[in-house]
Structure formats: C-alpha cells, structure tokens
Length: 371
Image (cartoon, rainbow, N blue to C red):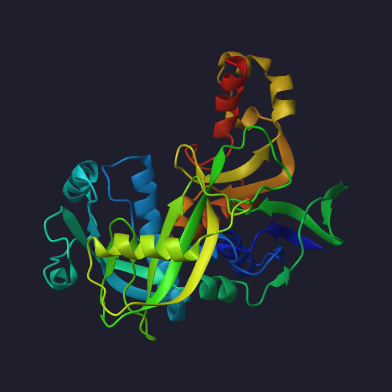
C-alpha cells in the first residue's frame, strides 16, 4: 500500500515523487516507456523567467524561476550548469515585451558586451540576465527517482476499492496523473490542453559558449564534454503518432534559426531528442484535484448559463489529482508545482485559482451551452 501513485515519470512526476519521498510519504511511479522519455527528455530544460510585461503568468514564472534555480543548485548540483542568459527579440512585438520586462523586473540584469562577439545579430533588442541555467533533463529526473519504486507498465485502467485505488496489482490511497501531452485514461471533457511537438539536438562545435542564448531557438552554454544543446523547437501541426519525423530537415531548421543570431562554428550533430510537450490554452499550468464534470453539472445545472460556483462546491473524483500544461517551462515550474500540490493534497491548502484545474469547468460548460 502506497500513499500516492504517480502516472508519468517526466519532470512533473519526478519532482512530485521527490517531494513526497522527502516529506515522508510512500510513493510509486508508473511509466510506460523510460524516465523522461517524452517531452521532458526532449526539453532544452532552460531555467529562465518569461520576458514580458507583468502578468499572472510572468509573476508565477519569476517566482518559480528563482525557486527552481535554488532547488536544482542545492539538491542536484551535478545536473545544473549555471550561466548568464542573453535573450534577443525575434520581432518588434517581442522587442516591446523585452523593454517592458527590463523596466519592471527586479531580477538582476547585466551588461552583455562580453557575449556580443558570438552574436551575429547585434542590432535587435536584447536583455542579459545574470542568473540562469540549463539542467540535464534526463539525468535530474533519474536522480530524483533514484530511491523510488518505478514500475515500467502502461496504466490503462484502475479501480476503486474501499479507501484505496488498485492499479495493475498495486494499491495506493491517492492518484496523480502527470502524463503531459499523452492522453490519460480519465479523459474528462473539460480538460483544456494541447500537445506540442518538440525537437532538441545536442551538438559539438568549436565555440566555447559561456552563456545561454535565446531567440528563435535556445542554445545552451557548453557542457563539460563540450556539447551544446539547440532547441527545443515546436510544431503544433506535427503528429508524431501519425507521421514519420524528418530528422534531417528539422536539424537544418534548428541550426538555421540558431545561425540567425549566433555564430556556431564546425557543427557536428551528436544526438536527437524528440517528444511532446503539453500546454494549456490560457498558458497557465494545470494543477489540482480532478473535477467530475457530469456530477458537477447535475448538481449545478446553472453553470451552463454562466452561474458562478466556487471551486469548493464542485464534485470531485476522490483523491485523484493532476499536474499538466507546463509547456516550455516544465523544469522551471515543476519544483514549485510539486510543493503546491503536496500542500493541497496533505494540508488542504487551496491552490491559486489561476492554476487550479477546476478553472476549466465553468468555461467548458459555457461553450456547451453556446453550442
């Protein structure tokens, strides 16, 4: 019998499992492939805020960025490469956002003149952040789960028995789905997220980069073995389950986009990583208890007419939770979301309504009413 069973061993599942274990809870993780085999393993795993004017999303990401820098450096120092970050605007709209960010941020901005010799784009608006990092995505997920039982099985069903759930002969009091862009077996109609394909390449080049670079794509600083990561680009139209991926063409696109602003020399592609991220339509992460939509609408039919109902009044699936919708900020958000969900699960602390999964219920009900 486990306190919690987590389905999915990406960065969200691994971070939550680590939080549970270090808080004295027993936890088991189910993974159908290998640890970080999906969007997490294909991620650039850059630790940075969002460069835009102040909003609920930028505030959450700034808090999570600072938290994650401290978390990885303190707990998983072997898997983090600290470095300044140079972010360059790719168009006039983003240029405006960068200027707004520079005016409003309390984060440490530094002079980027030391890095400009590497930049082929020297004219676009840019900002240099003093503190940033890139994480070894697969390495850190494996390290988080090192002393935790991971069962490599696909979860396609579960059953409720008295005060616990039964999954493939394993028993747990609570379930958490961290399946990212892969469809999970709950499939509630109001779930509001989309899968986004990602591709990252690790390369060797003769440059010794001592900063992280963002523009059309992200380019990491050089690692100890001289590898540099480029990516992860994404294509919302590509379906990796139905189409054959053209690695050669995608590599060319990544390297061409990188060359628009940074001069990489003597490039050799070493390895490809592909996967699907999961993003929400309002760009905020998705966290919390899973609402039973049919029971909630039966209890509050006026939701279909736009009646406001407090989240506490909704009907929920007992002890079933989710973390999802982190998009390209998974490694930034995961430690903070794991803390938030732990407090929600075991100390009954309310989640911020802007990230609570329940926010999609009323929105979906309105769409149903309006056809």
